[in-house]
Amino acid sequence: MKLADNKATLSFSNGKPSVEMPVYSGAVGPDVIDIRKLYAQTGMFTYDPGFLSTAACQSAITYIDGDKGELLYRGYPIEQLATSCDFMETCHLLLYGELPNVEQKADFTKRVTMHTMVNEQMQFFLRGFRRDAHPMAIMTGLVGALSAFYHDSTDINNAEHRDISAVRLIAKMPTLVAMAYKYSAGQPYIYPKNDLSYSGNFLRMMFATPCEDYKVNPVLERALDRIFILHADHEQNASTSTVRLCGSSGTNPFAAIAAGVACLWGPAHGGANEACLNMLEEIQAMGGVAKVGEFMNQVKDKNSGVRLMGFGHRVYKNYDPRAKLMQETCNEVLNELGLANDPLFKLAKELERIALEDDYFVQRKLYPNVDFYSGIVQRAIGIPVKLFTGIFALARTVGWIAQLNEMIADPEYKIGRPRQLFTGSVPRNVKPLAQR
Image 1 (cartoon, one colour):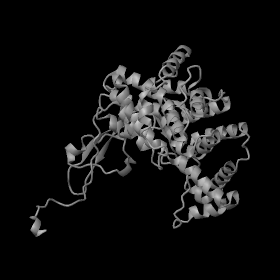
Image 2 (cartoon, one colour):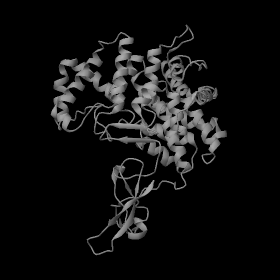
Image 3 (tube, helix red, strand yellow):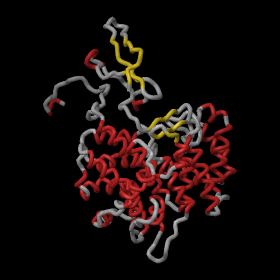
Image 4 (cartoon, helix red, strand yellow):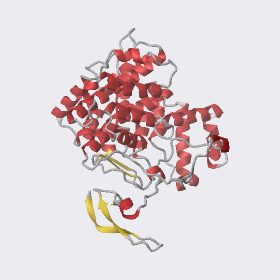
């Protein structure tokens, strides 16, 4: 960041002297006012619930322009990455700052591939869970437990440890997600296969059985790879901020990522695509496409309590660029699997049409987001609804690690310590028990 030409002046109506604060400019996006010395100079804090106007860090990884509907990874538009690169190239970009050349890609892919297996003892740890446990409950435990199995790479202040733990986490997440699924399904675990791609390997671990050979469908392989790319990072969202805050204490990378998994589980964050598909299935049960108009009227009624899932975004005030790509992928997958007439997809298209034409939704800029279509794609592939957020965690792991590593390398980073506006009791004395 660089010092802007102007400064911000904070003045007070009660006669207190005004305070000048530096203003910094990033490469793109809004300028920021540096308030680090505000408390020392004024004895006051800022108040910003939800951090709507607060930049908690400086970052060079991901940039979002919500008004334009723009998402950049290290400066590259998500549309170009999703159509011209695979997930391994995207991981290299997020972690190291540049897209790999041929040799770098081969080397990075090999490193990841060589770490896809997990310690055999993880199977016994997994068996301690009930088979009907939510996959995200299992994933939170499994990812945190990695620090007990791979404690040779847990020093967050050691650059070499951070790099090897990054590769291990990216490599092992598909294996853990597939193990959690197989365990809940009562099927044997399928070991990784080194001659398959990252996405192809995951499909095989999910859906193969020892009874017969499994052939990876290239259309599904590419669709899954695109899902991973689109979800790889998304600036300072709730789970990324959680990873940064957790990591700021100096805890190991596995624990910090486990914290991110736990945060992602929430229905307002990573669980949104699960909630979206549940909404579509509820409308289908009501009567399908014929009931869409009635459902949308309920959404517009504030007293109904009915919410439209998969539309609108905290940051995007335009069409989510990931949603357009996901819609294309959705069409490709449904056509490949002979599900072009899938009732839920027809339902989704009708919801989208109404939302893009109805003034109520247009004025509120409630455009479809990436969750709207990704749930349908995953359902078509055969991934159970409860595992959707686990897939999201798998994809977002690389972004979390990149953000964590960037924070640790930042000389200005400190342990996170938000302030508060205290509204409780003023100081008082404890009365003897008999007098209370």
